Each structure stands twice: as structure tokens, then as C-alpha cells.
Image (cartoon, rainbow, N blue to C red; front, side, top):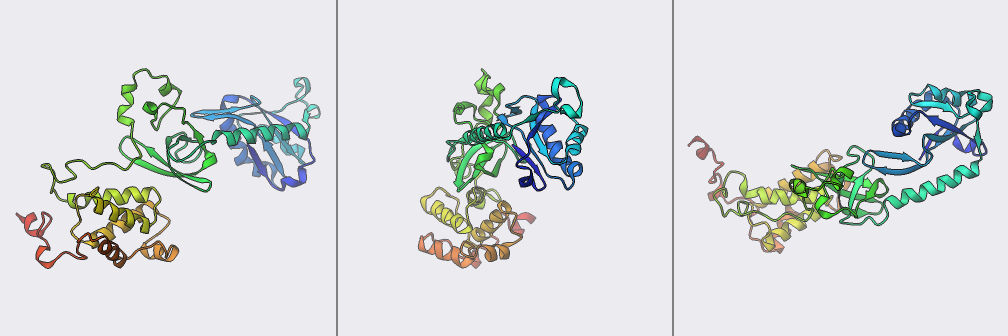
Length: 345
């Protein structure tokens, strides 16, 4: 890992110095503080720091060189001031004399060899990742969480993190993921760690085990039990399907195609009263999953080829011969359990 500040190409010919950290177990936090304070310490002077990371995992940030990293700059006084950063012991000196004149230097060739090995190890962590892989997210807002890769597009992956009561859809560079395909399927939970791996009572993990396969609908959702017909049940299946498609990063047109396919195949048995409900739900779920778009007008402006209209919904359903009206017939308006007359009763 490199931390750069200023015009670093101008110091490529400089030798490296060894910077000692007070504790290798807190290396990650110390390196973050160095990155934050470097602009104030070096100002206009360039600085380059290299920390060879040997291992990254849940709560693990292990350096290949223990508590030592390499740093160089054309401002030696600024290098000495790195000691003011919490967690930094200072530049390593000959015989631990502590004198600035005795600081040890390292040839650039040696550091570049370490950097090449570090790059190979970095790429190896994400090697073999594909759709369906169980991975750990190494950095970001949900760092150390585990999930399943649902989609890969170029060098970015969509990871589904299954919590106990909800799902998180995380888009991350593939190289920010750690391949955990070696983990047994019965232990693939979002909080997987060495403690979980050693757990003998695997039954404790059952409530946390999920699947990224599109969920099947329950009898209640099919309207075959006493819960069927309650307020909101008629459109619940359409909502679930469209929400899942939006969270997986589908475009509005792809969401519409999935909706039509689900209605035609019977996977969505509770048919909506009209196509306006389908169109409205599609817009709501897409905007909820893609917050960079302020409204549907912005979607039509940014991705005109993938945005849909009510006419597109009507045309797709007519082609599939679903028999769903564009609007609710007048004689059926306000005749369900949500009508005003029912609420008064």
C-alpha cells in the first residue's frame, strides 16, 4: 500500500528510510493518521510511503515487515516530524542511537521488489471471484461484512449482504473483495470470522443463512390462506419482485421484463388491479435503489433508452396477453377493503 503526497515522481531517485511504528497490531490506524496529517507535515514537499500488506481479513491488517514501513522525501526535517503522529516511534537509526545523522537508508531496488510482491498478493486475494462467490468486503462503509456476488460488470461487483431482517446491495471494485469460497455453505453468514469457522454448534447459524436465489412465494402471498386478501396483499408480490430486481442493479426496462415474465409464468400469482400500479411501483423501487436520480424525469434524461413509460408497460403486457387493464374499470373502483365505505364501517 502506498501513501503519496505532492509531486512524488521528483523523488524517485531518493533512497528510502525506515519508519518504525510503536505497535504492529495498530498499523492500519496509524497509517490512516499519517495519510491525514501528511499535508500539514510536508506542505509543498513530496512524500511517498510504502507499507507492504501481507494479510487482510476480518479485523486483520498484517504488514509483511512487522512494525516497519518505508518512507522517502526531499524534506528530511518533515520526515523527522512524522514522529509527532500518534503511534509512530520515529525513523530507525543505527544501533538505536536516536540521532538524525544515523538514520538507516534502504536501496530503492529492494523496496520495489517488495512492492511487486505486494501487488501480486493484492491481486491474489480476489482471484477466482465470480457470480455466486462468497466474499468479504475489505474497505468501505460495510467493511468486513460478508456476502454473495450477484453480478460482475467489468471490474466492479454487486455483492448481496444478507442480514437477519434485510439485505444490503453493495457495489464494490472486485479487488476490494476477499475470496471466501473455501467457507462451508452452512457457515456463510454476513459476520463470518475465525470464531464462526471454529463453531461446533452449526445450528446456531441457521437463522442467519439465506439464499440469493429469487424467493418463492408463500401460500399466504398466493391468497390461499386466511391472510390473503388483507389490505396491500394484492400488490405485495409485484412489489417484492420489482424491489429485488432494482436492488440487483437492473434497469427499468429489465425490471419491466422480469415483471411481465413473473406474471406470465405464475411466479407472481397476485395480479395487480391495473397497469398504473405496476408502473408506479416500478418507479418507486428503482428510485429507492438508485438514489443518484432525484426523480423519474432525471431517469428519463440520464438513461433514455432504459427508462419506461406507462405506454411501455401497457405494450409489454398486451404483447404477453396478461389481460390486466390499463386502469381499474369504473364499476370496480373503491370496491376493495381500502375503500372509504369499508373504512367507515
